[in-house]
Structure formats: C-alpha cells, structure tokens
Length: 316
Image 1 (cartoon, one colour):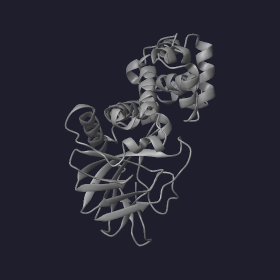
Image 2 (cartoon, one colour):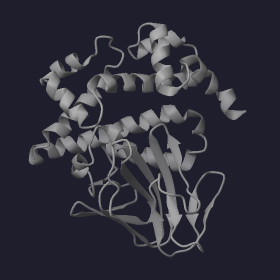
Image 3 (cartoon, rainbow, N blue to C red):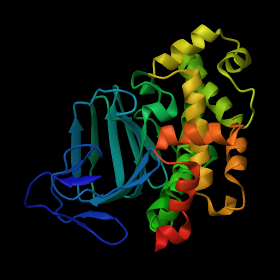
C-alpha cells in the first residue's frame, strides 16, 4: 500500500483500486494495519493482501513490527515498471521486470525505489505459511528470477492480479487460497534448497508437513498421529513445532479443511454439489458436525455462506 508522508501529497485511486502517488517525493509502503493517514489502496483475498503501488523515486525504512504470527506478514514484491531494492537480514537484493523479492514486515528493513516505479505486493501472515518471523530469514532479500518453475507461476499470477483484479472480486476466497498455496510452494522450494547449508530442519519439516496436510485433506484418517508417522517424527515433536506458531496439528488440519470448504462453497463451478458433499471433499463426514464447525469458525452456516456469495448476490 502506498501512503503519502506529508499532508500535501494525495494518493489518487480509480475504480480499479489502483494507487498513484501524484508527487515524486518520498513515499511509504505502509503495512495494511497501520493507521491510515490518507488513502490506502489494497485488495484482500482471504488471508492474503494484494497491493498495487505506483510512484516516483522513494525510500522506506521500517524498524520492524514484532507480533504474533497472525499479525505479522511476509511480503513478496513483483516490479512491473522500474526496480526495487530490498535490504534485510544483512543482505541486499535488486528485483526488476518479472523478478520477485520478499521481505519480512516484523523485522528491520529498507525498501528503495530509485526511479519511477509500479509494483504489486503480496502479503501473507506468517501463520498461513507455517513460518515464524525468525525462520523467514531464509527467504528475505533474495531474488526469484520469475522465469521458470513456481517462481514463474507466481510472477505471472501477480501481474495478472494487477491487470484483472477488478474482474476477480467475485472469487475472493477461492483466489486467496490459491495464492497462499502457490506462495507456500514457492517458499518451500527456496527453503529446501537452503536447508542443507543452514541446518534449517524445523523450517523444512513444517513446510513439508503443511503441504502434506493440504494434499490429504479429503482423507478422513488424516490426523496428527498419521502426519507424525508419515514424517518420521514423534507426535510430541510435531506438536512442539506447531506450538511455535500458536496452534496445534489438529487445529491446523481443521482450519485448513474449513478454509477449503469455504473456498469451494464460494466457487460457482461447484454449485451443483450439496453442502454435505462439499464437507466430505475436505474430510468432514456428517453434515451437522460440519455445519457446527463452520459456523463456529466463520459465524454463519455453510448454507448461509453459499447463499451470500452467489454471483447474483455479489453483483446485485
């Protein structure tokens, strides 16, 4: 998000939600939860925040914003015009064109745009990607070239969100899950490549465990014990690494199942499936049990949620 540092500067927005700093002086990349001293431009896709920023030469310094893993963010920048310099954790990275670079909002960092720029920023809470702020040091101020593999997919996705964000507003929850899943794969790829050199065993295990859970949500036998056995660790150790993220394996499995159900309930392509069938696709057997858990998590029943997110309801 782009915010003016001085009252005389204004951030203008159009119907697409894009922001333009109308002055080429110092600008600020603001955390989405900071006090809004002007106009803030952003879109939220589930737990994911997407921001489009545009302006002149700028430099931003932040001392860091420590906090719980559901209140601090790992951010991925994708320049569209110009380049961006990221300094964090004793490193400096330069990204331009289709390249990606990330930083952690919970720790000291400096972001520099030496020329006119336009970029897309993706922000994900640490909780959603299974990394503590400390563990994200393996990812910060490092460049993904965005020309092959998962990096290329993420680069194109962010560019597409900038171009077509308005058209995908009716699929916010579904898209949020897709973006978070792709970001998780991107981070897992980088962590695995760095683990051997750094001894980052716990980070790698956590990312792999979360990927395994997401791939097996429909399996009714999926449980913390089964996950621990699959990864050759004790249940106690598995609980310990999840506890570092203020959750437990059982709670994380349940919340991921509910998040997938919410996405599928909002998907027009799955409107032919019953509520019970949606629940079963994510491992919930028993419509009343599924409905109770969903209501406890989101404040409405699955049926009410589906009704409220129908395309006709969204576009009316």
